[in-house]
Length: 440
Ligand code: HEM
Image: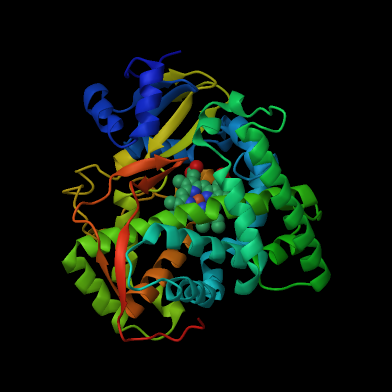
């Protein structure tokens, strides 16, 4: 058994990673080389930012790994969630869930995304500054609830509140220290989370019955109800419930933060704003066309390069593995550091600069640009998230003009598992005069 070198001190390493996940790893990389080991309170993590090692990791036999943190996440997503399953059951579940998220299907969601953006932003008070991150959070939740559950915009309200109560009940501390997932006479944070999660499950179960009775339609739940495993069996009710929870939880905060970071970066770089503005203003009045705009696409890619919403792709070994010259034992976790590989100067010259053009000049490999992870667990919602970012940004830039309230870019800080702008992204907004065809 052998590990690469790395920093000592489990507690200090864990605190460094949880509080300021972007500060410590570059120092560790410079000091110990690639890969290095971070000994954390919940295990040993071998981190790499080398595309050669990342290719090995993403191409390895899926049976070598279990999902990272499956024990801590299981009570939150449910035991049948694709996020925590491993081996053949994970493969089976992904095969069933992938078709509704295939790139070709995204056109079906374009109008829904633009309408939801119109509804949220039209409701804002234009005289006052507001935190765009709060609005995108509500908006991404509206979109995922409509796309997954097939709810009309007017009917998402009750579900939205249930989801927000449930998400607010999950403290990051519970994920890093699973022993805190305990009840205490109905008074502990875990008890409160359970109450909200049960209420959400009851609402989801009632909705599944309504959709079953109404017959097939275009939403993702209907596609799940019609899907069959290889043996011809449909998904069980508990699998449907856990996957609905998973898609709703995994699918809104991530995209909402991507949108908030993009709004900040675009408006902090006048030359980028001018170029993307010219592109969206001259695009057809048709949301599906906005997702095809090349510079807007590059802007979204550059946003997720510099501000990856998740910083690591993690895999835990279920048996020993020879990786990058080391004999890692069962139980060790291997991490492709999204943040570190995205800031390699040999791949991304002047890595700290926000320069979308780099994505028009060069095509990066799936081991060099990894905001959605890779291999057998690559993000199921990658096409959905990128489509949503482009449609919403195009709608906003065509419809309004924004100014940032602060001259200083927000610092990335950890929020549960994600990377958020500290203090949010505060803007003022005024109408642009050009109005696209959406139902507000
Ligand atoms: C900008 C937005 C998003 C980012 C940056 C993001 C990123 C990621 C990353 C890094 C992973 C881990 C991949 C791996 O282990 O290789 C992941 C997994 C996952 N994501 Fe996303 N995601 C986003 C949006 C979404 C959306 C919109 C959905 C659903 C509609 C979604 C559903 C999932 C699911 C189900 C998994 C687990 C896949 C598995 O374990 O097999 N994500 N995501």
